[in-house]
Image (cartoon, rainbow, N blue to C red; front, top):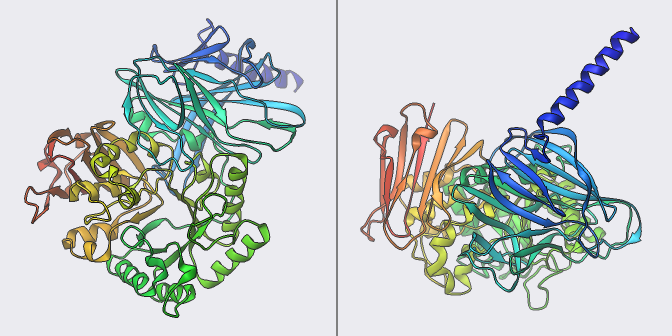
Length: 611
């Protein structure tokens, strides 16, 4: 028996050794399971490759006052296999594989590296801390001058453009995600994931071609063991980047035992057309009625519901919605960001006991979820506060939408009641400045490759009419955004009379629109120019495309990559006649051209009932 046991252990050990040998080529190069991605050590850092092409130089590492160097080579630790189910997102069933390596650094920290088939993730682990603040991080990416990149200058709410650039500024502060094109057919998206308690989020500070990972303020005394969030670089073709679930792959699994109450859906939203409409019961009722007519499951009652006019209260509005079988969501001010001069209700969520009482009241009243707004950045206080809000909301079966907040970093897996996050320069900005009008189309065609890759995005799409400042995108362009942009709570921005004036086919489309997808594929496109996305729900494919330019554009539409046989479809396209903006037709997919000519700032949508 002992002999048999020894033979079994020997075989297992040989298997581990063989796997470790397969994970490196024996020349100081470490690989992903499929061998496509690899790392080599270079002086004090590493260089990341994809298919032999240089992707990203990481010249500095470490957690201390100065950069650290690896003590020896990376050692293979284990294979990693991720296989889990999401409740919302670009894909419900997510899988990925990685090889994990570790090494000690000269500053005493442990560097843990994972090479996934679609990217790199690494973090620092520290032990034996004795009440000190988090040490300074030295991780630095080198982005050479001339590299095409789409990067957003950092702001607390991540509300900015991602302009194409090839020139390094002398100094700058940049938010995630940052998209690079280091080679003709290779892209890299830099971000981070898995923010936990006692951690702050980070951004990039640049000096010339060096971009250093810089965590925000974290003054919590750290005792015992601690680690950083994962530093993430998604790598591959544009289609690989768009389809990647790496941000949730490296995040903590779902912490909720009961998730049956979490139901994504489409929402009628008041604020875009009526900035102060949520203090008016009659306006709220209009949006409830719109939700009923369009068969939308939710209505959002936005800011100032605590100041409702004409003797009405939020209780009246919630009762009105529930009586029509429309589930109400209500807004709160986080009261840590914009407070003075900001709308309310305020200071109801900051203390644990107040938060518990408020969310219990929401649950009893029949509120389905909360939109919480005006946070104050990426520091540890905000990160812990967000997680406390998510946990308390889950105890009271409340969905959550964070606004004026940081971007998704994996919480959508850990806390699946977080169905959407703003963190985007979205359609709300038609209310604020005229800038958005001219730049919206190009911006819209950039977001699927940048911000929306990393998690749900509450852009508030699909406005056929105008707000304070006009839009010049076409009707089909606006409709396409509802498919191009993934959000577990998809808020429709326009006013009821605008939606109800659209053809019956458009109204039916909005009523049937999924907010959960089984699969997502990029069919064609390039940031800022055009994008064609295919998303599948069950056996139905939704294919949406937009032109981000001011000129007519021929856009590839390779349906053969998602369909093996012809199927019936309904096609929503632009009509050149402004008085009759729609061209809606039913046809077989065999009749759909492989290239679509899009109007300037135009778009299209196909709904394909594949079997």
